View 1 (cartoon, rainbow, N blue to C red):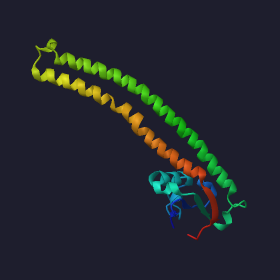
View 2 (view 1 turned 60 degrees about the vertical axis):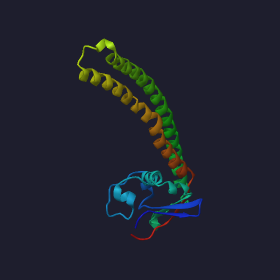
View 3 (view 1 turned 120 degrees about the vertical axis):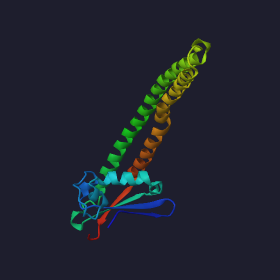
View 4 (view 1 turned 135 degrees about the horizontal axis):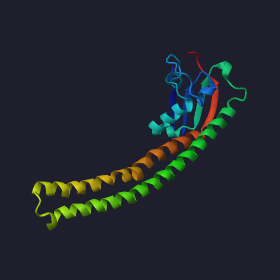
Length: 195
């Protein structure tokens, strides 16, 4: 009654997805909580469901075959060749999009880092003014608050560029790995068991 992932051996694996219509692999069907397919029960396209599974479970990245279970009367005459070509084409197009996103993420991250370093220098400069003899006449509590406050603000400003340059690319690279797995999968269409 549910999708299954059967891994056999170290390299070969198989993912099984049950759908009531082949078009639901690419187009989100209406939500049907009583469907035997988790993708259809959730109202998401089969490809999206597959990608989320590959993204969440790195063991599934070893999968080399996608078994698409359809009702017997909905199995295409070509045995799924056209479905496989469509799946590979969509995966390749998404791969190109993710690679562009990765490049843009790095570009935006480096720009943000330059701005953040400038702001850090300004904040540290203001902080050093409050630490100097120039503000000796201020109350010690206010003086220290401004000194440490500007120093902290300057370092906190750096967090966003670090997040963009270091952590966001990790997520994009993981999506790229998932898409590469999908783009290399052999697709086998077979009649599924009755719901």
